[in-house]
Amino acid sequence: MKIKTGEKGLSTIPSINLTLKGEKDKSEAYTLKSLDNQRKLFQENQTDEFIIPSKYYIGPIKSLQLSSNNQLDKWFIENIIMRDIDQGKVYLHFLFFFHSKFYLI
Image (cartoon, rainbow, N blue to C red):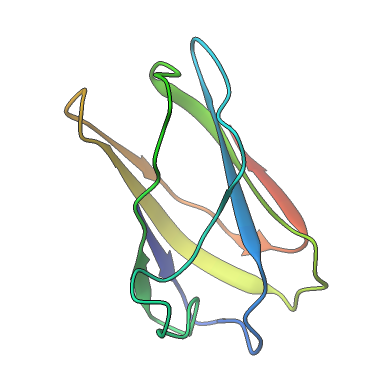
C-alpha cells in the first residue's frame, strides 16, 4: 500500500490505523508503521509504503477507514494505491483532508 501526502503533511507523527472493508468481510485494524521504523511518515509531498498482512481474504476492497486516537492537524492525502498481491488487483483512491477519522467509499 502507498499513501501519497500532498501539500499539507503532518507536523507530528500520530498513530494512524487502517481498516479495510471487502465484499466478504472486514479486516482488523492495522497500525501504519514505517518499514524500517525510522522514517518520519506522512510528510509534505512524500509517498509512504506499507505492507498490510491479512489472516484471511476479505474479498475485493469496497472501502477503507483511516483513524487516529490522537488529535491531528489537517492532513491532505493526495492518493492511496493498494495492491492485492494474491488476487493481482490494484485499487486507486483519491482523498482530500483527513482529521481524526475518515471513511472512503
